[in-house]
Image (cartoon, rainbow, N blue to C red):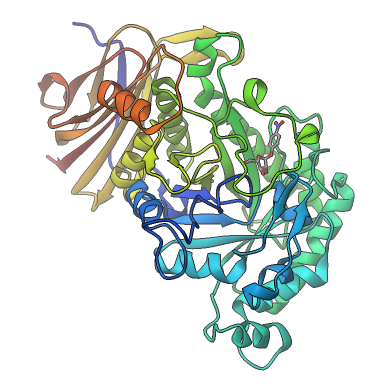
Length: 512
Ligand SMILES: O=[N+]([O-])c1ccc(O[C@@H]2O[C@@H](CO)[C@H](O)[C@H]2O)cc1
């Protein structure tokens, strides 16, 4: 059979090395992400610190390397000092972002110590909505300072001698969004971010800074925002943030399946905006991207609308989206795009980790389980190692309403090892409703594919609960003991992809 698509690869052609922070996630004080998510002292599996062991174990299995905290929209009205010190003296406050009473039982120390115990790198955000330079610099000192100064000594008095050494810091969150508490225009925010970032780096010069980019590519200020903000902060910051959520709208399945092409274009545009500022400055520095919120999120149809939220107490069920096999295929494809931008995207966070638009769900006092989207994330975090190869994909296109013409087949290939031999990760997506044959062309390379994971899309709406998730897993997530190879010859290996599917395969390769 004639192949429908070809993927040309060679270890001499590489896009970049995968930064392990690409497999980050996000825990916000929003809904049940913290309370009855990662933290539930009354739960049967809770450890001595009150954190759920079952959730931590699933987090490990998911392969999450880094977690962003404490927000999100929440951070823009958060007073971090209220969340440290003796728990019995902490006072609740009304979080204005999600109109939920925050009990302050979990704060900076509890989170950072949880992350440390679980072997997860923390990524912290400072409040540039209702607060500013002093509070941001104080938090860096609280986390990373050594004995002998006010905020570091407060941490020590609170029982933590060793600095946490938090490396990655967000200068606020989505400051371009009118919904943000303390929302600012690009000039106001750019100036504040530059001053806050300057102070934070004076406290600890080893930190990396993320300046806020746009909340989505649909924002009216997109492009202009990036350039203005970077004009104030280019020499100071390391990364600019991107946020994007995708959903199936009006039953437009083709556009939804093409979401990762939308993400690809978004990344290219932000890179172009950042590089334009660099060019004007005649700078050799390159700003990289922190894609610190990405996921499938049924914003349009299921999001209650931030301004009309009723005031809630914990546990508060907010945006607990339920995912389908189709969502899992799209999520896997979004990871293909992230991998293919490994040269400019070192940091990414699946938003979020547990209960809130999340791969892991829980019931208070009950089980924790995997949503379908868990599987492509976990398989990619496991199989994508080393470098991303600069592959050439030839594929027919599909015409979509939202993204125009998009590739029918997408691919990413990773190579861990020397030039002469390596371990491969092969990630392939078939966005069409028919099976396709994909010919891997690997001239001069002997390649043996092994097993992996295949996720196929479904047509049923997802239903909440562990039983339904287990049923989708049984029907739409397959562990492959062997690759679906249909033909092979020296220099070519053909695999067959199921309709509307995401496939990840392991492999080994040596130069011949
Ligand atoms: O497109 N929108 O309407 C939209 C609305 C809210 C929004 O908030 C972001 O997503 C929330 C959930 O991860 C985070 O707290 C925040 O940073 C992100 C996008």
